[in-house]
Image (cartoon, rainbow, N blue to C red; front, side, top):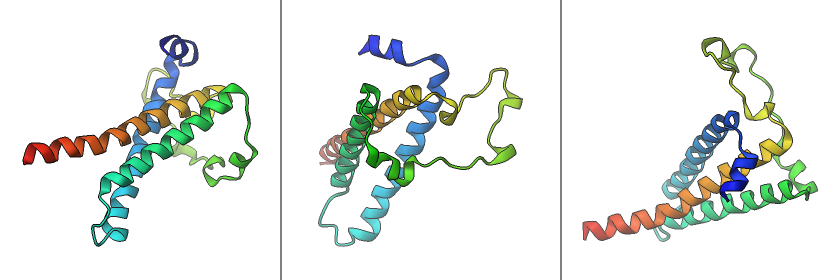
Amino acid sequence: MRQWLKERIKRYMVLPIIYGTLSRFLSALTLALLWNRFVNTAGLVPVSHAFTVLGLGFFALAWFNYLRLDGINLPLVKWLPLSQKKRSLGAFSDMSDYLDEEIVSLDELAQEERDACNLLVNTVCGVIFLLLPFAQLVLAAARA
């Protein structure tokens, strides 16, 4: 695993991985908490089930990224709304004027580098969301 990371991940790819992990984690956490607040009003299903489902969803996305890295292109992925390119925000999209080194966004990377970044982002988010129910169990046991 370490050798694969050294071969695929370069230094300039660290920031897109961090930004992607943070944005996907916060979006999925918001989705889980909104589900708990508005859909699960009776409290029949604990929020840890939502965390587990989201974690497994992130692992499924990571598996699709791994398949893309392996050379298998799925035609269904092109139809998803998340796979479409977003338009640039113009002058507000880059802060490279204020830094010594140039910031590389995920859109500027090659397709293989983008797939490697997405694989790591989805794997990290999946691990976090699968560890959250265990953290809830530990906190509940510590209170009792």
